[in-house]
Amino acid sequence: MSIDPGTGRPGGEPPGDTETSGARPRGPLRRGGFQPRAILAVAVAWLLLWDRISWGNIVNGLLIGLVVTLAFPLPSIEFAGRIRPLRTGWLIFRFFTDLVAASIQVLRLAFSHKQPRNAVIEVPLRSRSDFYLTITAELNALVPGSVVLDARRSTSTLYLHLLDIGRPGAIEAGRAHVYRVEERVVRALGSDQEIADLERRKHEDEGA
Image (cartoon, rainbow, N blue to C red; front, side, top):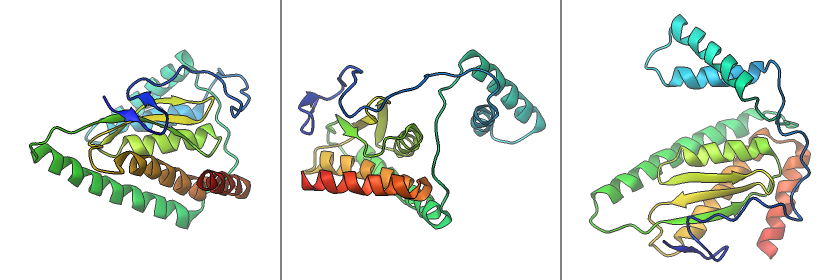
C-alpha cells in the first residue's frame, strides 16, 4: 500500500471522524416527515437500474422512495446558490470528457502486463457545503479509476482510492482533478459569495 505524501498516512486508513478548528457547526443531523425531493431522487435512481421506463417502474420507485425516506430520514442540505446554464453545461461536458479519458486509461491498463500501484488520498475540499461535497464526490466516483471511500461532513474531506499511481506526479494530479471538479461545481451552482470564498481559499492554498 502506498503512502499519501499529502498526509503522511498509509493509504486505505482514513483518520477518525474528529472535529477540527476548520469544521463548521452542525445543526440537527436528521429530519423526519414527508420529503418529496428525496423521494423523487430515489425514484430516479430506481429507474436508472432498469432498461426501460414504465408506469410500474415509476410507481415502484416512488413507493420505494417513500419507504426509504420514512425509515431513514435524510439530513437537510442547504442550497443558497443558483444554476448558471453555461457553467452547468461546461460541468456536464467536462464530466463526459473525463469519463471517456479515464475509460481509455483503465482499458489500456487492463491490457498491460504491469502491476499497478494504488493509493488512498485525502482531499480537504475548499467549499464548506454538504451539497457541493455530495456532487463532487458523485462526479469523481462515476469516473473509472477513482473510488470515493469515505466523506467527512465535519471537515468537507473526501478520501479516494486511485488506480495506477506509479507514474510521477500521479497523486498530485489526482488531488488536483478533485479540486477542478469541485471548482466547476461551485461555479455552476454556487452563489456569488460561495464562489468568492472558493477563490479565496484557492489562493490561500496556492500561496501556502
